[in-house]
Length: 210
Image: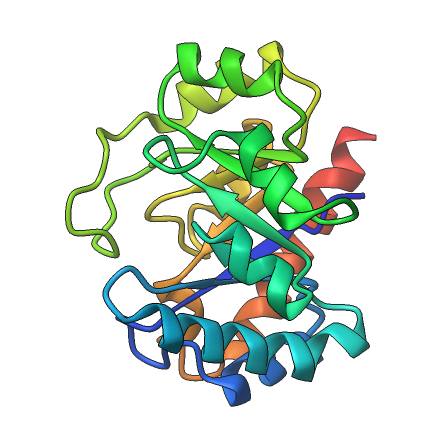
C-alpha cells in the first residue's frame, strides 16, 4: 500500500531539510520523505539529500529527491520527483536507475492522462488548495479535480497544496492515496503528533472504503 503521508522537507520553510526533523517524522511512522530546495546550490541539495538517505534509508524510509535524478542515483535515494518543467519521467528513470520511484506533478487532466501513460510510480495532483510554499503556484484545482483524476488512473495519487489536518479527511475521501504536507508538519508544535494524526485519518478513511 502506498504511504499515506508524503512529508516534504523544504529548506526554505521553518525546520528545512533538518535530519533531526526527519528522524522525528520517521519515528512517528512516516515512510516517505521528499527533500526539496529550489534556491540553493547543487552541492547543498546533494549534501542534504545524502544526509537524510544515510540516516533514514536503513530504517525503511524512502527518500525522494526533488527535480534531480542524478543526485538520487548518486546517493542511493529511494526515488526522484519531477515537475512539468523538469525532465520527462522516462528520461529521469534512465538517469536514476531501476528500483527507484519516479513521481510526477500534474495540474490538469491532460497532464494527468499523459502521466498515466508513463512508467511513473505515482502521480501528484494539485494544488488542491491555495498554498504559500511556492513562489509561483499553479492554479488551484480543488477536490473535484482530485475526484476526476481518481476515475482516470489506477496509479497512486498524491494530493498536494495547502493541505492541513482539518482538510485531510476530505482529501482522502476524494480519492487521494497520500497527502503531501510541508508547512503543517514542520511548523506544528509537535511534528510527530501531527504526523500520527494524518496517518490515523488515512487509516480511518481507508477502512471505511473497504
